[in-house]
Image (cartoon, rainbow, N blue to C red):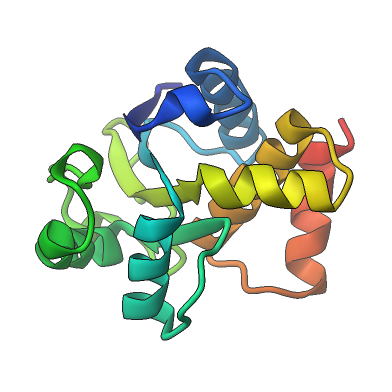
Length: 170
């Protein structure tokens, strides 16, 4: 199994190291039966989060995490040049949308497939962890699994909660 994670942005502001994040996502991917995937994780601040949230969800506020499946990530690359600094830009990963099933799971097992991008606001993450009285590392893992679940096709609700809980309780 090969899980490649393309890290971008201000990781110094994150309560999880790239190594810990990579290990956690590999555990999740393994439990989900995913092999040979590529995932992009971008860390930004509230300003970039507000811009992205406004453009894609029509919400004029920062958010903790945004998930963009492979096709949305490609569209995002074309639009974000004016929204966020080039150092945080999503990279043009080479994957064809036809390689993905409807819920973004790889169709081919022997070839790495780009499943999408997660954009995390470190500002919002830190603020919410404090407000909710949660350990920042645990809260970061909650957000990552939440965003990953969206990439797998889950919407908010009981099914998504059950999916996320299985990774957070172990």
